[in-house]
Length: 207
Image 1 (spheres, helix red, strand yellow):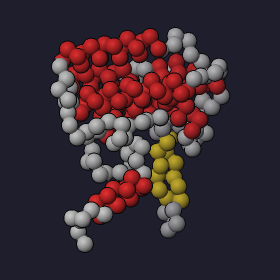
Image 2 (cartoon, rainbow, N blue to C red; image 1 turned 45 degrees about the horizontal axis):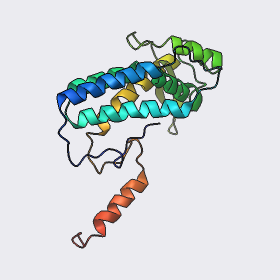
Image 3 (tube, helix red, strand yellow; image 1 turned 45 degrees about the vertical axis):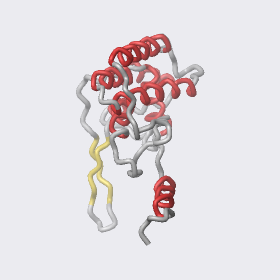
Image 4 (tube, helix red, strand yellow; image 1 turned 30 degrees about the vertical axis):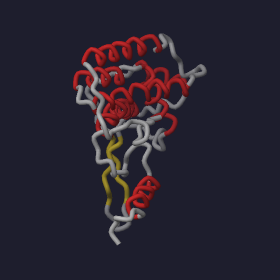
């Protein structure tokens, strides 16, 4: 879903982009987002998930480029586009209610939104400005006999967290250290192994 990687976005050099060009790109991205947003999209019918993922990935790449060039105004616009995008909400609902392992674990409201009709209802309830509900407190027994407290948020709050994550992750990922691979999108242990091989196989590498 998130296609940000070291190979997709160059970070070694910055291009000189005029403010007018950046503003044009922002407006074009806004018009494209509005034009591609379906007025009536339903989880009960067929959804083109490939096109939805491409649309979200394009917005995230544009946000990463704006952050890379230090354009805060453009970054705010792109984050607004991501948080209000219908495609982002669709992907977040799919992740929370269909892909997540805790999709059948309700919060304090007792709702899970697993049927297609319930997911469609959840799509209409998205409100990033409302105050989140309290977490449901449960206790998990540890090996030493003690109990570890665990807070379980509601499905709607998990959905809002997923939407905010899609808007914040490209901004911070582009600012991380280039050789930091832990808990980053499109990065794994194999990337760290490859970087170690590149550094240690050099003639000037430490023996």
